[in-house]
Structure formats: structure tokens, C-alpha cells
Length: 164
Length: 110
Image (cartoon, rainbow over all chains, first blue to last red; front, top):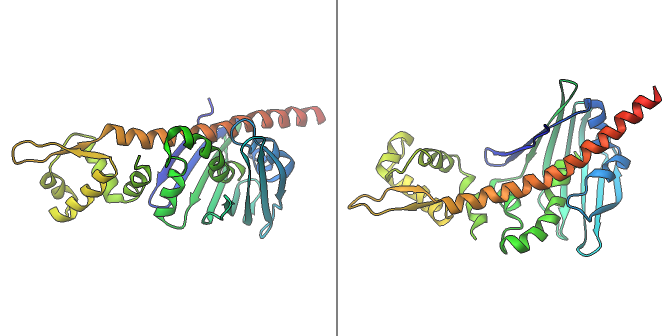
């Protein structure tokens, strides 16, 4: 059973953990090989990632562009800070919606867990207010409208989350 | 829906501790001030933020004004986190499939 946990920590962190039934090497590759990233960092059904630049080296650029037939598109840019094959990825990213969101510092660790991998992703926002806003994005106009908004936020959180 | 306010209210460690205490049952300002080693005005200020965020409510009991958790306010936060979790799960479930394909590909090559 691969259960995801998501919790806030302190004033500026969001921590996500998840087990994968594949060794750290494979999970690490899935996060850094653009051809693989394009297959799964997509959020809800209907979104595609026509552009995926992922230079997995310190200082390397990240650029993901998403598209939806009805809801338009948005993109994310980022830079790698540190990569330790196959155990750690540190990067910074921001979304363009279309204005840039504050930088989200993301540290993702992969540890052997039985025959698989335990992933721990720690997101750090500049301040508590940003994290609160990030967590609250999509709720301003009620659940219905927010669900649509959440889809772009998946862009926000998920790619950070998911992609690295 | 003061969800933004909810998260801002939750961003403070003292306020999270107050909520944890209230999860055990209602308490007055005086009862809360003692374990937190804070003055009553300081506690009252935190309670005001929590109340405005819809996370707690107060009850009138003679001269006492005990506070307790406001279920609907907390549900909103939970609901939002549940939505985010659902979204993340979608990506990672998809990744499970990608990893399975990578693994069988790997085995074939060997």
C-alpha cells in the first residue's frame, strides 16, 4: 500500500512522504530524466507537458510547460542546487500564473525502503504567509471554483512536489 | 470562507498548541494561560486570531467564556489538505505505473 503523507512543519515547511516499489535509482531517474518526468508530472486528467527542460546538474535549468485543452496553460522555472545520485535532489522553483510565485526551495530525498524507496520531500517557503497563501490557493472562491484553480496549483505544488 | 486566515492562524506554534489543548476539551482563557506560561491578554490575542479564522468558538457559561474547537472551520483546512493530497496522489500513482514499466524494461534487457 503506497500511502502518501502530507503535513506542515514549523512556519514555512510542507513535508510529503511516499513509498515506491522501485529502487532509489529508478525513482531518482524518474524525477530527473525529462522524458520520464513528462509522463507523470501532470496533475489531474487532461493536462499534458509539451515542454520539459530538466538539466540535472548543479546550476542546471528546469522549465516545465503544461497545457490543457480547455483551461489553457502555465509554466514553472527552476534551478538545481545539488544532486546526489540516487539519494538527494535540491532545487528551487517558482510558478508563473502568470506572475511568478515566491521561490519554493525543495529538498527531495530517496532512501532504500525494503525492495523499494521511501521519498521524503521537504518544501520551504520564504515565510509563513507565503506558505499559508500557497496552501490556501484555490479556496478563495469556494470549493467549486477552487477545484479548477487547484488544477493550476497542482502545477504549483505538485511539480515541486512531484517532479523533484 | 476564511481559509487563508485559517492557515495564517495555524502558522503560529502557540496557536497550534492552543488548538491541540482544545482538542482535549473546552478551556477558558485563564485555564489556557497557565500551561502556556503566558499572560491572559497574550492568550486572548491568540484566541482572537483563531476565532476570526473560524477555528474556535466561545460559549457563555455565567461569567465564564470557555473556548472550544469549531468543527466546520477545521474541516475546511482538512478538506483542503485532502484535496492537495488527492492531487499529489494522482501524480505518484501515475509514477508507480511508470516505475513498473521501467523495471520490466530493465529486466528484459538483462
